[in-house]
Structure formats: C-alpha cells, structure tokens
Length: 406
Image (cartoon, rainbow, N blue to C red; front, side):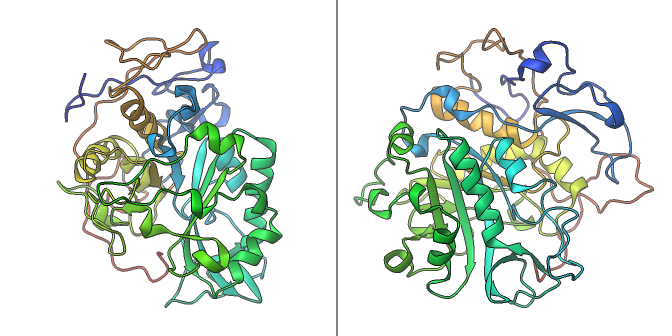
C-alpha cells in the first residue's frame, strides 16, 4: 500500500493504559483531569495554548527497536527535538530574565523518557564554561543563556546509564573554541558511550556504506553519536563533522511546506548519497506552541513525503520539531512511526512481524489500532496566536529574521 496526498493508513500503537480504558487519540478530554492513556496528553490546537476544545494527542513514538535491532543505524528514524535545552519557563542560573524564545516544554530527561533520541544543542563558550544558548548577533549573552551544557549532558549520561539498550544522537550547533567540547563530554562521563569516528561509514564513490547494526552498537556500548557543525575537530576531540555524514533540509519557515525540500546551506544536496543519514527539519523560524500544534499535524506528514522524494527516496533518520508534544492527534510521534514503517517493511504500516499489513489493525495483544488523520498538503507558518482567534491558525507570511534563532 502506498501513501497518497489524501490518505494515510498507519497503525498508531497506544500504550497499555490506553488499551485498558484510557481515552484514545482524538478523544475529548479535560486538561484539569485528563483521562488520556499513557503516551498521550490532553491538549488543544486552538490558540492561545490552553483554550478551546481539548483532545488526546500523542507524546511518544513507537520504539523503533520493536522492529528489531538487526538493521544498520541508517535504517531507523528517531524523534528529534530542535533546541532541546530551550524549555518554557526556564529561569537563568545567572539571575537574568531569558528573552530568547523557548522551543520545548519539558526537560531533556523528560524528552528522552518520551522517546526522543536525538537532541539539537547550541553550544557557546560563555561565562567561563560551555553554555547552551541562543545567539544574539553571534554571541551568547546573559539574557539568552539557558543553562550550562554540563548539566544537560549529565542528564543524557544518567539516561544512557539507566537504559543500556538505548542510542542517543547529539547535533551541536558549535560556537566553541578547540578543546572546550572534549573537556565537557569527559566531565559529563559520556566518553564511555562514545561512537568512534573510525566506525562511521565512508563513501566509496558509489553511495555510502551502511552504518553498523544497531544491535552491535548497543553491544559495544557505542551508544552516543555526536556531530558538530564546526569542521576540524575530528582529530583533536573525536567529534564528527556533521556534513560529512548527514544531509539536512533548510531549517525554519523557509523549509516548511511547498513542493520542495530545499537543503540547508551547509549541507550537501538532499539527494547526495555520499552521506548515509537524512535529517528533516520541520519548524517555524519564530517558535510558537500554537504554530507547532498545527504544523506537527497533517503538514508534517506531507513534508515527510516531500523530503523523501528530495532525498533520493530516503526516509529521514531524524525528524526535528519544536514543541514535539503538540499536535491535533498523532503529531511528530506518528511521523516517526510512518518513517520507521517505510524503512522496515516498505509500507504505510507493518505487522508486529515486520511484514506489510493489508489493513489497519491491532499490532499486538496489548495495543490498539486507530486510524490517523488524513494528511493535508504542507502549510506555511500559521498566523500568530491571538486571544480573539477561535479556530486553529492558518497560513501567514514568513516571519521577520530572528537574531537568536539558531
């Protein structure tokens, strides 16, 4: 069965609590006393956040390892959070008010527990340490600095230590001096999980080699992949230069919607097969919970198809979004499920045995199936939220440049 612009049959695996009586995706709910099942939350796509009728939406993808671990890393897709550190309500340890906009709603620890397996972090030398920060004119300042990077990397270390079968990828927007990051990762205790550059595939001129099998990475404890945007740190700090291994589409509003999936300026063309991994960005330039709620729904599924075509018929290995828990139903978790189903069985959805299923139905005794909303064509960034708006946001002009965006 193939995906079209008007229909998408997928299996939405819900968790045991949902199967035993919790409300399902799309069911109405009350934010103050949600009856949504595990892996769901009660939310509304009507701006401003918290207004309008609420329904159960997904917060977690199906674990890609349910398809098995015997395939190369580049045969899996992982939920990715853009600016994972920029969390709503963060108070600066420096005592300054943070004026740069947030991109997520929960801590990195919570993100990892919800199935996020790739983090996008912006790192700067600041205040005598490495900080996670938005830039303002290319500089980290007290009112754009969220948290010292060491604190977040220790969250990653704690997760890897407690979950010995999990693999995490970190993409660094890197503004640090040589030596800063090597010292940082060592201090966080992450060196023991490091995936060595020597084991990363190199192009043979006719397309890139496969990555190691996921099960071998787990067995070898090579469970942390780290990519940097800054070239020249491979030999000194063991950091892989991202653009040697990954193709990535344009971030921000320029990469949303439309008939194409343009590459990011630093990336090789999307259809370059010299890079084995594909990263798909799908978020607005100026982050908004209400905008994310709309874009993480049907437009994200449409963008998935568009970027698949642009990337030489490859499904993205990393799907990066803002406010990953917000959608009108399946959201970013559903998009990750779709990509994994396509990677593993070549269909819109798979059986529990990894074969194509002819119709939607239960995948296991402890899960229930639900049809996903039919995807629409990708939309431009929605209108800014307003207390007077009573319907989900619609298309809007491209937002003005944001100095602290990346």
